Image 1: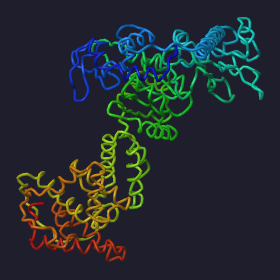
Image 2 (image 1 turned 90 degrees about the vertical axis):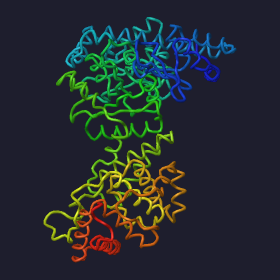
Image 3 (image 1 turned 90 degrees about the horizontal axis):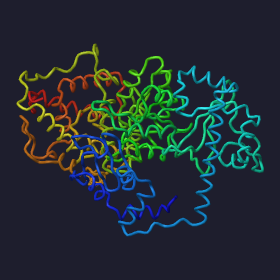
Image 4 (image 1 turned 60 degrees about the horizontal axis):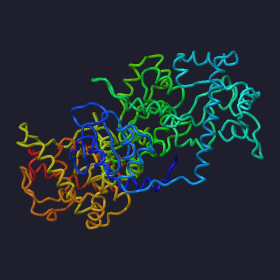
Length: 613
């Protein structure tokens, strides 16, 4: 019996899930949520978490709302669970009206049609007319047990044999058309079987009910794969092939020490079936389209971190980008995605047959988080970007992170992506015309103390803080020092400030220090900004000026930058001096060079002790 969604929402709202679950297992507070030892599998360390509106076990994968908990824990049907909870909440379960009863009856009728067709096609696969289809499946390595378990069949030649068999059972062509099994003419009348000369694959919903079919043609016909059309039972964007089996396998109790079953998304029917046969029963596949938000929601109802497995070619990379962009707005603290790429020219079926289950297991064990994969996908082909490319790429990364609905999680993703951006595309000696062997004599080196500072890391971090503080007070300096600043391996808090500063600069939102502070605070970086501007004594072996405004700001910035790596600073000046002599130094670079030369001379004169660097 189908129930009004509004009634079910009210029932969930009136039934605190923690109180219901607390009857079966002892709950303990974990921040805003609750945790416990899972009631569905034996464990000693709690991995079962209860949130505001759902529960999830990170051990066995059990997941659902308050209704599904009652169903799973007490073995009740959906109507029984609803009736029990409604009685406790003081609600009356609505009775279905005539229209609803008629729709339910129609659905049952279409299900009967599909089951009758499935039985006919399964028989035909093992009859003489299905010899080619059966040979194809066996050549692909499928056992008779697997073929029967998945209900694979043969649709016949389309000359009316299946239609006649069904009509003899009282199933009219109109019902077959409603079930998605026949083609229609321009007037909407059935005119022929949709599936013919194809190996058939039953498509079931997550409960295991038959809702449609897919078919693969043998030979050169097109389309190679065909799915049934949308019907009252079948929605392509909401259905995943194999989810009913995968759901059961992921949630099943495992022997002690056995690894969990991974929920893994692959591309096609045969990949799913081959993986199930090969010992990977968590495999599912979309139905010939890119993953949809509805399918991702269905995945997360089974596993908090499903693995998306794509081919290693260009098409597979495009599919991975599309899947990541679809999934990002749906991520939260309790659900994410992982990715793995197949070797070039392989699909899961071929990899399993050629290299065995160990190769597939290794591939899945190496699945990478969505943030890491997304960075690689969005920066693919970028080697040594110029300023325009860097700005465009940085914007693309921040826009990708901004897709995430959870603001706190979005900020963490943005920080992670931009940290990798600065690390990956920081200029190094010998790049971009800077330094390198044989490039001429450097300025007279400044002696660096052989004895390291008493607290070298704290000293280095404090200098990085000062550099950031100068830019927060004088954002107009950023264009001159941006490249050098982006080379630094900043601590996490300063790196987040830098990422926010770069975002605002790219958007043209840095007219003054006040606007910069407001922009960073609006981005959730107030604490980091205030820490960067902290005025506690600096653990430096130099005497810093009382006010950074007492000297020329740019020179002061370069002073502290030079102290982080005096040798590199000298090599950079040498490289730019050579460019000046060859006439390849632009006006902005010349302005920066003049300021850096003043800082260099200050170092040489001992105005700032280089032994501290």
